[in-house]
Image 1 (cartoon, rainbow, N blue to C red):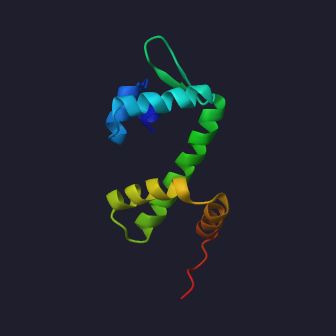
Image 2 (tube, rainbow, N blue to C red; image 1 turned 180 degrees about the horizontal axis):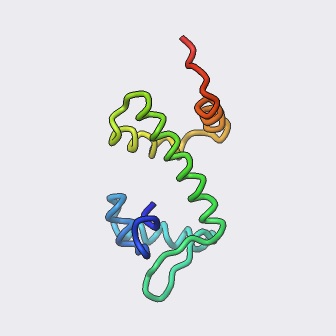
Amino acid sequence: MLAREKPYVRSIDIANELGFSKPSVSVAMKNLRQNGYVQMDDQGHITLTPSGQAIADTMYERHTLLSNWLIYLGVDPRTAAEDACRMEHTLSAESFDAIKRHITHGHELPD
């Protein structure tokens, strides 16, 4: 999401956004680089690789759909965004797809 807001993203931007320490983010970035999900240039600018972008797109879709759904259900937007952030990482693909089908097909919730 940071990449949508800034022309480039650095480790310090991620640390500030997520409230993690810079060393924790550095370790995470190293792991992501080793797994081929991000690249970092000489100035410390982080970019997603195609495989990293695919994962980011999936997570963004999950976050957006879950946030909007919770807001539609009457949850405060800030709480909805925080809850969606937790849910998007733990919800199985099967459960997410079922929720997505339910929302997009306008089915009523059971009593």
